[in-house]
View 1 (tube, rainbow, N blue to C red):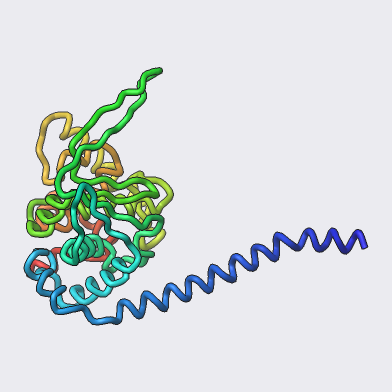
View 2: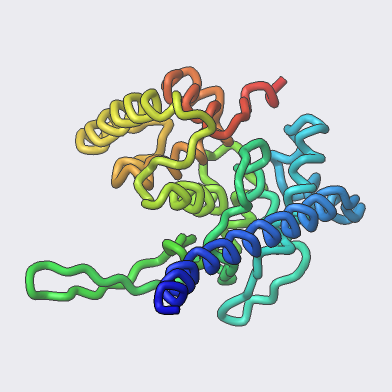
Length: 280
């Protein structure tokens, strides 16, 4: 009798693990079915009109990528909550333009639609945020104006005036939505350290070698006051370097390819896209 009870107690964790895997598998199947249904839905004519008018990069995409982008947007908008702050009213225009810019990064990447968070907060314009740093025994609080933030395992925060500027201007190398959602891709690999999940195992070694070398060059240029096609903000940390080069890759592909060909190749493999092809 006692031996039977011991066996029963030992089996409880195994039963629990089995049930967890069973229900997790069922949940993934159901989520996959729901996503496929959303992706297969046609988009309203108003979506295409708005994207053509206000998202410059959308007009450069070949038709197959335009269709893929809008299908991903259907899932994104179903799974993310976009909430206005400081009296900002979120309408379909706001949702569509944020979703389009965010989904461009995952248009060909296998993944899970930016997992780990659900909420996107939108301010009407550049906002002021507090930050605290520690120096010895002191805790120093400061304020700064911001266009966007990405909190680890938390919300993405965006300023609408920068969102709409980034959508309309596809050649200045600045896009706050792409920047903050690049941080979310970076975060999927456990730490926000400039290393996203890559399509193949073989790419990790090349990625590390190329980006380490390029980041060191950018730090030196920043210290010497030398300008580069890559914004100097990318020299502040590996995480910011990845996000800034993402903006450059999508908005200034010709210049990035000419000046940093090895870096361009790594980002082409990472995003499984070649923006140079869109220019023709």
